[in-house]
Image (cartoon, rainbow, N blue to C red):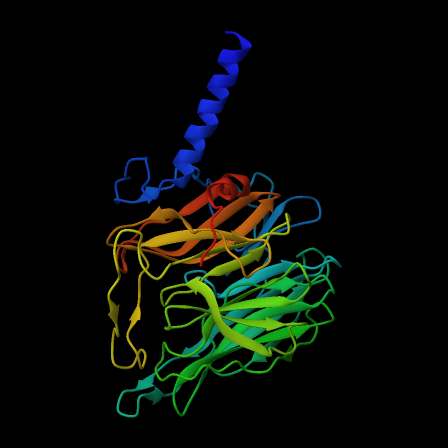
Amino acid sequence: MNKAAIRSSITSFILLAGLLLSLPEFSLPRDESGRRVHPACKLLEITRPGPFVLMADGSLAMVDDRGFCLSRDRGKTWTEPVFVCRGLNPAEPASYYLLRTKSNVLILVYLNFEGKKFSWDTEKNEPGDCRLEVWSIRSLDGGRTWVDNQRILEGYNPNFFGLIQTSSGRVVVPLQHLVSDPGRLVVCSFYSDDDGKSWRRSNWIDLGGHGHHDGAFEPTVAELPDGRLLMLIRTGFDRFWQAISDDGKYWRTIQPSSIEASSSPGYLVRLRSGRLVLVWNRLNPEDRLWPKTRPTPFHSELPASWHREELSIAFSDDGFHWSEPVVIAKQPGGQLSYPYVFEPEPGVLWVVAGFAFKKSWEDPWPLRLELREKDFIVASKRKIK
């Protein structure tokens, strides 16, 4: 084959790859559940769903109710667990996260399901006897022993999305909290300047609302390129709201974001390239409008979109201007939601759906994907208006 023919073949391949990445409908056949996955993604061969951290020697680490363990083959096999603490619930996604700090301290922040209670007074439309506390524990020796187990937030505090260390060394975790009169959810961050030995709370972010799935809730956070922090907050207002902080201590800029979203959380990560990536459920599926509903009178004051059939991905260089979303997986009639995103090596992303069902909340069917940042940067050049 001559050089001209080779160049022509390469050009055709690049154009075809770009076309595949930009197609709203997927070219791959449905699997037995009816699920469709973007052709630039591949199924991830891991035996645990995370959350994960990378250790100093390059091994992968994770914690569950059995304990702390390591993998040296990208999550296929794991060492015998070392017990960490009671109260973890691996069946509940977005309920705990592990972080390795710059000082090689491991920090686990978790919802403590020991003594969990939840009740809702339907006559008053107010919380009853509720308890789900946030605790933290840490290891100073690479996971062999664990110390400083402590409660950092009492009351009832459901799912949260992320645990980060900023460039200044501050550790920040975004949390949600149930309040009364009227019953609703508010969010905040807790921060630590001593590798998780002690914690302090930021100001509350309160968007009002009334219902056990109303207000400001299920936040996710990442550091922006300029050192500020961006929090994206789930709402029932057709989009994420965003809060901006100089340091994770005070959130003083609180406003709607440009990112349309259903009443479902997203996961925000600062990648090693410096870009931010977001995985979430958009307001509507690509091919139709999703009806707005109130699943019960106690969920929320206003009807909202509860679309969870598609997971989308978008990237940003600054946290405010986002690429056109690309659907990475869809489960017609079912659910793919509560995502977790991990970067095991530069430019490689693992995406795990915390809730993945063939039909609504029935028939679990796990979704664990691997994709490459560069593939979706090519496919996502337009901006959200």
